[in-house]
Length: 458
Image 1 (cartoon, rainbow, N blue to C red):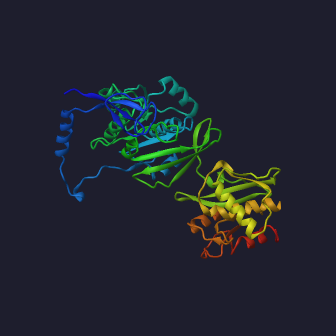
Image 2 (cartoon, rainbow, N blue to C red):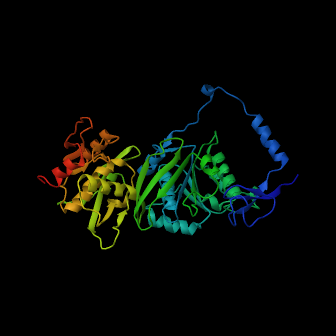
Image 3 (cartoon, rainbow, N blue to C red):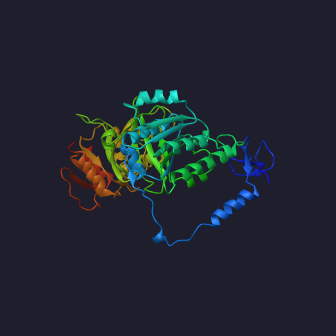
């Protein structure tokens, strides 16, 4: 029996034997894509293959050689869990222009540099376009880096096997098609999912495991385009975050079968591509000879790594009925809570003041340990008095104005001590900890801290 067509909504999965302009299930327009329904014989073949599988004791199963490959791009290796697993499939997605193709081209050349034959297959750019970008961002182009421009994944897999590559880059998965699904257009859920299945099968060949990276396009909701099944299928899902006009790029894993999903890597976009920020604490703070009003330093934790973060506050009188509260680095609600605590516990008159807060470098955080630094930054701007240099604040603030203990306290203090801070202000509830250079100063509430740094001997 021949295969027959049906139409499936790429938004909710609703199926119809005929084309519909509007999906009757999710009421979306133009989302019905043509797919092919497998015939009975193919289903039976798949079933026979499934039945031929053997059951084994788990301890008797021979494991693959899944030693990690250290690419040399330190922030990428960190997010991947300490390197790239040899038989893994990773999908990287981001907004247009965030640096997906740039990062993977750098990775391709780096893998070729350390002895891994790599094929970079693009369905969006020609070989000459890839060459121009490589000449702009790469110092030297390695001999074992091959490129291919086509929309046929069958041709890519065939050439990859012929070259016997160690790594394959597919940019992007939504631009490729398989010959057996020719009636479906590139980018349709069926094509993208089947292409991803083929890449997984290619990577996890027991006799010849390979590293595979897929570029995934984003939809208008800033999510990976296509069916969620693709994310379940691959081993690692990476996202690049960052505004188009901001050089900072954050790389994070939302799924990682071989490592933590909380790890975050940092890159700086420049003329030579994406450069790893190996010392984020130095990047996210400003070294000054003299202290400035409105600046305070704290320590947060992103993944397993503590990072020093500088917050700056600008405050001026409003001439409108409602003052502005602008925050580019933390949730606006958090800023409003900190302002309310200062108004209630210290009786500061902030009801007619515009308050603008941001972090140096544009780093966003949800770590409550930065709240102590936020309060001190706002208070410094209010009193128009700077906090002395080489001072760091670690702790959360309760609604009563008390300073709470910080999570991962020891690691954060160690990072502040490593960065050369002379004083580290913490909660009196934190346990004693030894430091090499810094002096630990304990406070019960924000009243004591503000009296000490903004009303006292400073």
